[in-house]
Length: 278
Image (cartoon, rainbow, N blue to C red):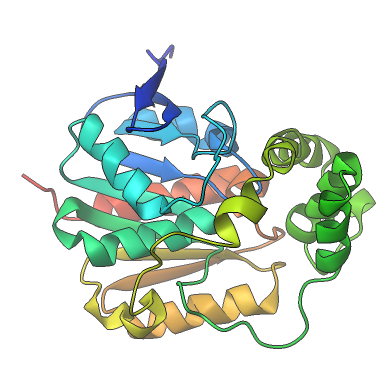
């Protein structure tokens, strides 16, 4: 089946964001991870747009969107983006950084969110315990020194491979796809400018307010991801009232890319269980 996909730019004030849209029905909005862009959802695009009006976009500083030149508030960018598209109530799906953003957004705009899917994410204010991921400081140093190729490979080591695998144990095409996305944000210095100094963080942070989330919530994590990501999934599962938690095997942080069939099945089953907005 050939789908009518629209790729375009939308102005959210001081920046243009690239987005794509396909399908019809209730609206599903994908928010990408901080080491990717909207292409991370390629393996979800046809399966989900066959049932929903599906939207994906590149956040500021990623993919084909404008470079971030000042600190920004990601959830405010998301609200401006949805408002410009005339979307008043949506299913939100976010991975990693995108997951943190959609949790914050749901707490700030509960009337605009029909359901919430959080993948490989921690809620804002969540305190990570134990040692930081291997290669993290080396990756940051490489980025600061302008060794973008080295920093990109170390990003892959941290997030694509995860803590339990060597590169040769991971699908080479998957690693190539992730590298092609993360190198753009590294070249744009997006993480240092925005994520290290976010504008207007949610206060109190989401970790203190999870009980306020009433929307049906799907929590997905990869079995081979950092143990703190899995701990955060358990915390959210315990504190959000209406949840379903799924741990997908043989995948680390970007589980929708590594296990697309299992991921798509889990997401579709969840969405079909959510009461209609009509």
